[in-house]
Each structure stands twice: as structure tokens, then as C-alpha cells.
Image 1: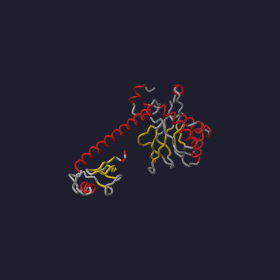
Image 2: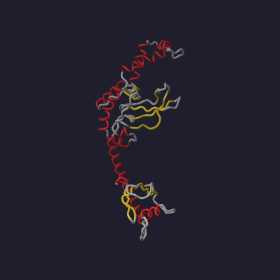
Image 3: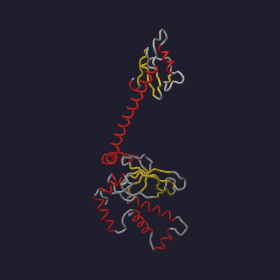
Image 4: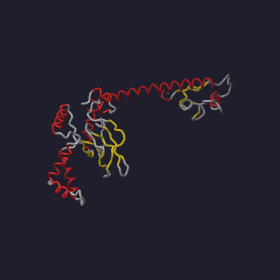
Length: 290
């Protein structure tokens, strides 16, 4: 059993969350060894997963990259996922494997294999089913029984892995179960809290940036105001010339002209809107507050 200290120190989120396996409820990437294409499969339970599987394209595919712990994931119809291998499914796979061996003409031919071992086809299939259902479990029957009893007492029922395509019915079931998994999962709770804290930090940062931009704008407008008495000259036109005069450091760039209320003005990289046109300058507002 994994101690609380070991769970806390683990680098696997699934273990930290109290799962029995590091790959529990993880999105896992497998790479086809022939064409190099990758596929993401979700492990829909707290159980083991193989390092090598058969890819969508019928080739051998290896597990690559880091797993992404997502207990609330809801796969799409047609996606492939890991589920528990049932005895019924194990027999179907064993029968298909026997049929494939029966078609071979080399030393792996099923008939030749059975003759060498003195087995019948039914005995071969039954043995294959037992081997499939015992994956990841101790070889000793007593140890296996003790482990299964312990896990069952903890509400753990995951068996050996099987790869299946998601149906509409399965997707609906996963969607319902995802709510329960996410609500009870401590890692998901930490992620929600961290996301909330990050959002608040970003909001504060946006506010600070905005305040800094407004302060800079105020300083620029003080230096770019129309000086003295403009007489009969159009103060807006005069200010326009001063704002865009060549060589003026940090001078605003007008989107359109002449100045008028509602006009867009860009100061540096920040857009503003003309609120009022006055003799001594402009009153600008950030669009969000206009």
C-alpha cells in the first residue's frame, strides 16, 4: 500500500489524488511504429495500461510522452479508450487470436502448436482467457486472492486493460460519471483553486497595466497640449499637428481625423476613444470605460 507521505511526494497527480496507479484516468499518447502517427487514448479507470498496443492502423504502437491526468475527461464518439477487460470480451479476443494462428503456415500454426503441447483448442482458448484476465496481478493464487480482497474492500474493481471505441451510450455514461469524479478529486479541486487565483492575478495585472498606460498618457498630454492663446486657429487641428509631428517620442497615432468625440486614438499600443475636444487638449477614455 502507498503511504500518505509517499502519495504527497509522488510526481504523479493520480497517486497524489489517492489512485492506485499512476496512469489512472490519464490521457495517454501512443505512437505508431510504422507510420509515426500518434493517438491519444484515455484510461477510463484506475487500472494498468500496456506499454505497447495495436494502433488504429493495425501496427504496433508504443506509449510516448507524459500522461495528462484528466478524471473529468469525456471522450468523443469514435475515440479509443482503455476499459476493464471482461471475461466475455477476453474469450472473444482469445477465439479471434486462435483463428489467426490457425491461418498461419509457419511454426506458429495453431494445429502444430496444439500437437506439440498436447492441448485441445478449447484448452488453448481457456488458457489465453486466464492469462488475459491475470495481467498485472501476482502469479501466486493466494497472493492474487489477497490482493483482490484488499482492493475490493477499498472500492477498487479495475481489471486488465482493453481498448474499445467509444459509442454514444458510453459517452453519455462517461459524461455523468465525470461530474462525480471531478467533484471528489483533490487534484481537480486544487486546479480549480489555482485557476481562480491565476484569473485574479491576471485581472490585477491588467488593471495595473491599464493604470500605467493612463498615467503615461496623462504625462504625454501635458507635454502635447496647445501652448498659449491659439487665437482664431482651430485648437483641435493645432493639437492634431502637435500630436503627430515627426520625431515626437511616443506621440499618439490617429486612426482618423480630425479630432471628434468618439474618435479612436492609439497611444503607443493602447487604443483610446476621444471623450471631449477641448481648447487645451483632449479628454480620452479607455474603450472599456467609455
